[in-house]
Image (cartoon, rainbow, N blue to C red; front, side, top):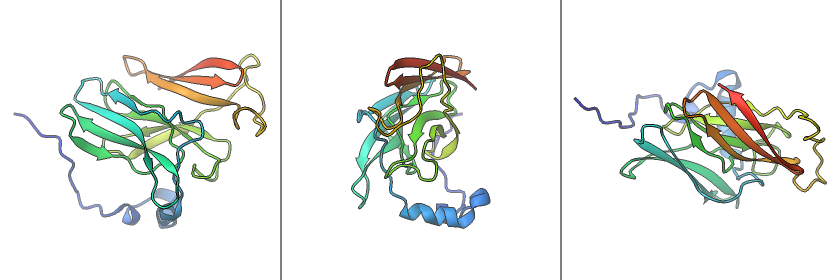
Length: 196
């Protein structure tokens, strides 16, 4: 017996009417006025990542934002016949990085805060963000930039990059236990391994 994996409406209503934790309805309604743009560190190239079993793939590409004049990054999930399955919600500051966890339950990318069109309220924050196959956010954690043998310096807007570094790529290990983050600092590259 085979089951078709089809999105289903379970009657939860629109995003504005759903429960949003401690932030409440005000946060859901505030999203409508948020400007969405891609990170200044975005390389502008599309990315593709396959789920471990080869049944689905995700494409991350740039698309024009509505009336704000920004370019934003969108994730689209397709099945192996290239039929669109889902499109991600708008995420301000979403970057070019993309990797689907081989075990199939999470898609990872990065999000930058602290610029016009990016996430607001956390000026120096940089997150690894997770999405489900249906395009909805599934959590995040922030990259804590620490001094690793003098590789990092204080963030200064006079630097070549505003923040002094950028995330080049991210990737899961084949057993889905380790997420690696490739960081390019103004002075060179370093690597970080983040354990799940």
